[in-house]
Image 1: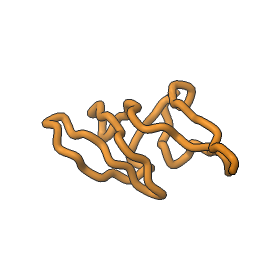
Image 2: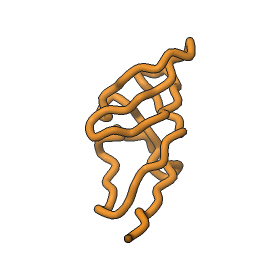
Image 3: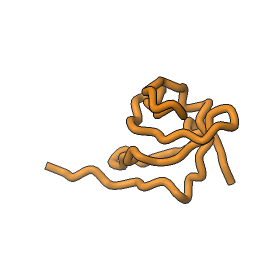
Image 4: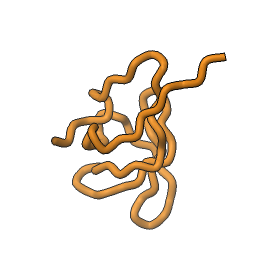
Length: 71
């Protein structure tokens, strides 16, 4: 079930890998970078834009999450 990206919780040593699909106001977009409160996404015309994590709907089970390397 889709939920806002802002509600996806990661452990302290986890990172979310970019390149995933999300819905922004009902329009599918590809997220290319995840920042603290916002994300960079590709708009349908190919332009890079910013969106708030709370505005991006994702399916958490489809996200790729990796652990940071220690050291």
